[in-house]
Image 1: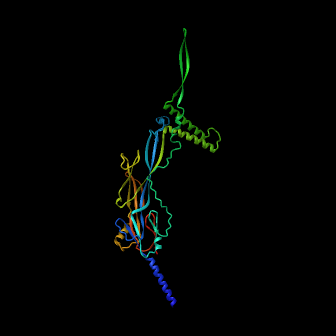
Image 2: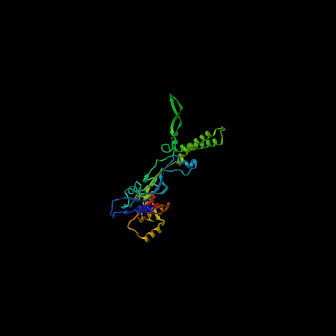
Image 3: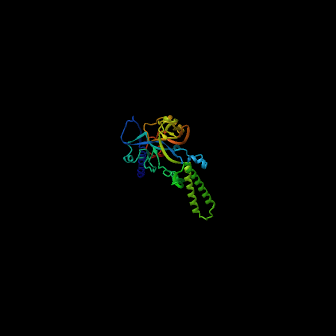
Length: 396
């Protein structure tokens, strides 16, 4: 009986110890300018806020007039050719994405209670390098912690293979021709007058129209040669590789001479990224982020001249409305608080160019949702890195 009573006392003591560990309380305090510290025994953490990143890709188009553009319709029947050297811009793509960063308005201090041991204090929380809470240890999270914001990126420009420096390389073909004139001279010898003829050779520049005519004739010759090659006019049994090589060479030569009439367009892709942090007081408001001009490209909002304003608008979907109403009715139950966490809100993010919607996407926006807290107890919690919402929850 004594042994049984001793065993029962041990079980009761163990239950008391477990109860003590399970209810070893902590208190979490929201930090702001008016918060008065009660103790320095604790640790700070923050909740994340959402950053909306708008990436605008601009296509810069450089138009170069061909030297024979004025004769394109006369000799080749081409109408839509580059008529002058110009630069124009167009919006190639607009993309919306989100990232996260510490919310400066949502920092918290975890006060350790007297019942929390020194070992528990050293291994209680797991944070990112920016101080965003990940959860109570142990936490395994291999997600990248790097957030990049590109203000204006202009990647290496990709030209056509035969661009700049060789835009119209066939224009350097022979531009002069030999002119032969017959010159007659009268020679007086005593009482006789003789007339002698000489051939005078001179080099004369060809007129633009002459050059255009020759280039058009050469184009016709290239096309005839391609036709003869494909149809087997030469009656030579070329193998496949040889035939393809000769056809490719003739096609490239045709393209080069055709540029003399049509001109050249060079496309350069430019990327601009903008960071926007939604706030409660800007909901359903169109916020201007940049100005776009077809002849000048991306400009600052206060730049002179015309152009279209690109705006961003964030609209709450309302998925947390019922939770908000419940929390308002529930009120504050206790002076002590456990870990604070977010319940993020879905929002519709719209980017417009002028009056036209260019891109629209539904995203989770942390700061438009709710913040509430767990009861003051020792929890085993894992948080979503991007939102600060609870991923898993248990109590020790």
